[in-house]
Length: 93
Length: 201
Image (cartoon, rainbow over all chains, first blue to last red; front, side):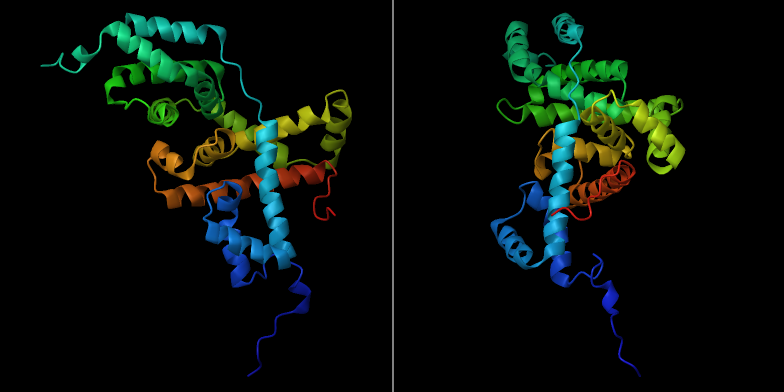
């Protein structure tokens, strides 16, 4: 039986992730949200020093978060909302 | 017996404490309500209802604990209840979803060229802002909610788990899927705008 050979031309896609890459991808949210433990951070940093695709994936993830924070405009609270809440509260026993 | 709870504080004291602890959260709470309902009047009603409930249950709120998370939790629950009641009249939300679906998926060249040249006067920043908002609004509400709570309001995973009554693991996986969804939508948009984000060196 022939051994299964991984085609060389797939190397540049993001889907040929090693188990390490898979672990790093699963950590990305926690990394950008500041929820990763120091062990997880160390693991992540060590890995991306040598892995461009995970380095890029992290950048994209971080970019998405910044794009949201920079572009979703906050709505001004309608003028009368505060006073109407206050008067409802006052009238409530 | 029934006046036992209320008798600890006079109404004036209770009102003063309520105002000091909970009213400063009006701005984020209104923004959360608006991002959920996508409608100013509904957001207004939802916030009022939330404060009224918070007032009724104020004795259960432990002073000095996370007032923002507490109010967000009440609002989220009110929204779910209202949403269920209103689901017989689906007009607004559906329209938004349909609209942004076609904006991202259905753009053929003609429409694209017309839009980009028509909108020269509008700043690129505004265009991007609109597109980001419409991508966010088009997410299913559970996904939209975790993005709002995490990225726009800065809640921790633990706080989100409490607000949404779900395990932290679910918060994490929902957030991950929501971000992948958004990334896909915005990458499609970036491509139609001629941004090439595959090789940025």
